[in-house]
Length: 127
Image 1 (cartoon, one colour):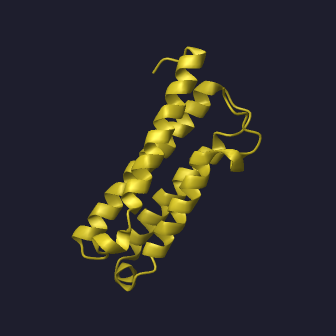
Image 2 (cartoon, helix red, strand yellow; image 1 turned 180 degrees about the vertical axis):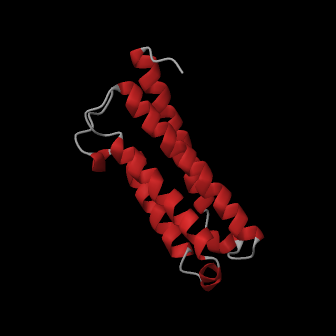
């Protein structure tokens, strides 16, 4: 039985995106990131884009448009994971300092994929 979502705050994937975003901003507080402000901004924007796209998709939109916005959020998850990998390679953070944040974004991407598939299946959306 499906649960009716009355508020954006009721959406689990949105809550997880907000929490993961806070984890990214904690990572960005490490001193080594200050040496590369452009990269820092890139990671911050990608993290913010995840929850922003989910939020944008919660309005009175067509299911096709919601699926597009959720797809944008999923791509932003991939951007965050890529940035975290680059940050580790550049020695801005260690694996321990990233604290499983990349895995959190991978889980969020899976949840988004499931939502997109549900929208497409229930409404006959192709693509």
